[in-house]
Length: 86
Picture (cartoon, rainbow, N blue to C red):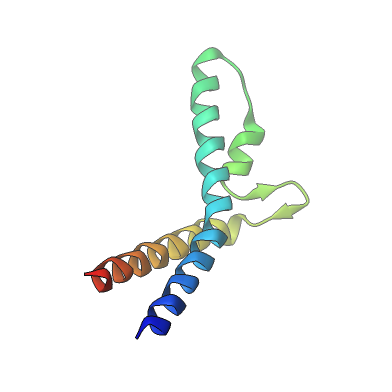
């Protein structure tokens, strides 16, 4: 039983580690852009990053879908871990 819990935790950690970096990029780029916009600073490259266009690597067609799916999976796996903890 304990081995099964450890395996679930490892899977949850891997999923959240994979989703953490793109989520952080999206949050930071969107926040900085919204702060700079009223100041008259046009940092359009931040919006490109926010939507998954990283210059030579353009993930825009899949970026929001990936973030959504990985976020949902992270939340569900976290809730399962919480439920099994009690």
